[in-house]
Length: 316
Image 1 (cartoon, one colour):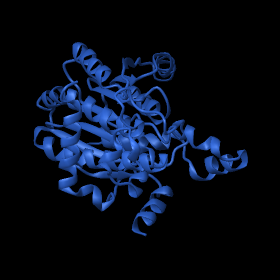
Image 2: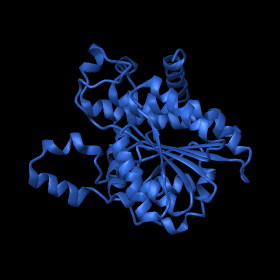
Image 3: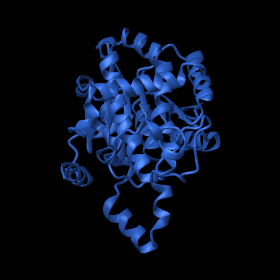
Image 4: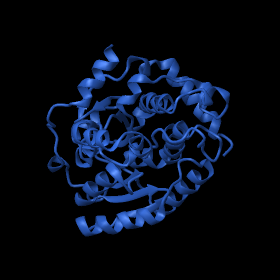
């Protein structure tokens, strides 16, 4: 009952106390936003560019990303940089990180924004993992791991000694848990519903963000997880077609917020001076610290997930 109540509260949040006007000047800051060619990632990149940051759009689709970069330049006067990143293919993630490291000596903010939501059950990653867990959790974990050295070295050069890693979760984590037998494709996974696999991946995002905070907080990494809100983006593209047109219109009008709202909480976590003290915290719409599901805070579960993730990437 408590999880349902939390979902209801976050589905209709109070008016935001934070606005993009409060974001400080970001000139000189280097930022990566995964999945920023569309949706709230694109909106996030737009706001960061408008505040002077050097922004990398890390995404799989080069054509869509280049079009997004063109539009963003028109809107902000500043040009983002494309970084090819396929979170569903571990070998290419390594190549993406190496490409970034060949161009930059600093990374101030990493926003792990990309994600997939309830795709067809037969879809798996290039390495045979459940597409949702493989992309939303394992892919982002590996990308973050490869960038940890540059994040840590950058923290040493910043006035407050900190850099940020922002991890997009969801209110769906309230209904999730971790079944390690379903992370890879197999009989156990095939028995799961697509929704349960999504909930699991978002639960994993919260667990992983906290574990990262515990392991690297003393080296300047500020790791947060957040629910961006129920947003009218293309993330639910596999869900909405199941509804009749009239129902779709009601869902969009009544339950979903604009992408500018959806970007607020991650912009707060990434840029606000106050958010520098929120290591390990979970944020809800709009830019509020809220308790996540209690089970995500289990230190043994955090260690078990981290160990499993390490095992998957050790030979890539």
